[in-house]
Length: 202
Image 1 (cartoon, helix red, strand yellow):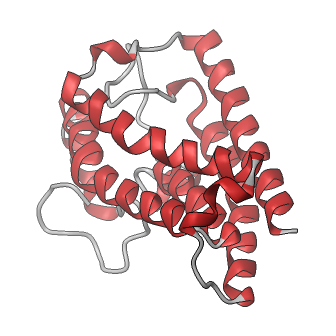
Image 2: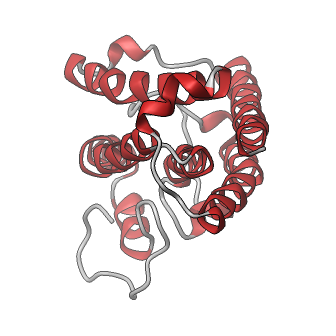
């Protein structure tokens, strides 16, 4: 049962993301991934390929991922279901809010606007957060340690490597407007404290 729930959540979220990204590319084009630094591209592949591969392998043939099974209580697997279900409308909300400003890279598009409405009112990178939550939810539903570890590595990589590079580009484009936005929001989760006195990554 958890396999089919994971499949429904994963396919719906991925389909929603693909559709909204396609619409954005039709409206404002896309930045080629090849323009990013080679090491960043390689890092994305090192993390994304095993993570996607593990999920696809589990969904197609759960026995192929049985080697990474972990003892996860049933209630925690249901928490994974709830988390996964929540990611679907969240992904839609984030991408609708972004509109044509969505980018496949850490670079900014020509004429890109700074979006601070919707989920961006509280979080600067909700799409990263929703994506990682999706894989974590599948890992919990599958009771699969490999997928869960990949999701943890992904959140560390995004927070320490991707976010600083993307925000450096946003600071170059939007200057103090983005710095003030950084001061009142969190990077992947809402800020629990008040605004910082100085700028910097959240």
